[in-house]
Length: 213
Image (cartoon, rainbow, N blue to C red; front, side, top):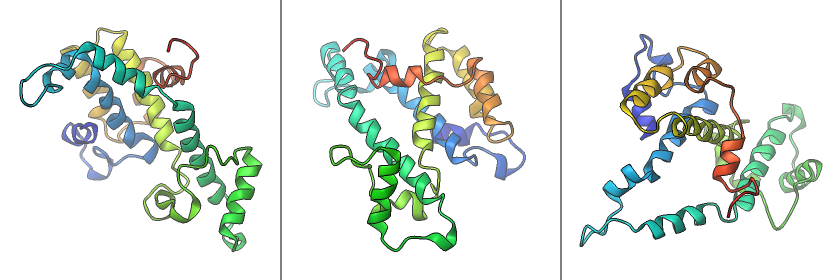
């Protein structure tokens, strides 16, 4: 949905700077940002209904789903960040130094990072880590975590500044959805939120702050 809006609201003369034609560590930001709106009551109650009776999803079930979404996030986030760091290790090798023992290099890299663990392995092991070999995320797998941080921080701004209103929608469109790559990403983010990116809203959303349940 976020990608679609990013393209629909594009208003640039050159296609190469328009819509989703942005860097990997920005393009997922509008997508992840808009995922937040799916669970707010005024949106959720429009579609989260029983197919046979039309009964709206009970608040108790919504609360349970939200709690479940924060369960075991240390593991999920850990495996993702480990994969991102492993990606960087592989793409820091000079062409003439490529190892022949693939899994041996992976193990040594994880040891160097202090992240080698059978309990929390990388989300993708080297032989099938397609993202970083032929899927456009070479030395860029970190962008999923980075844009998630941007998305939660931007949504935190929405929550503390009136919520889902027409004025907020116009601001979203004007400051980043309609900008494509016509401005720097840092400038677009500051134009919307008024500050540099903060990690705290993402940690809170994942239940990693030590507060609450």
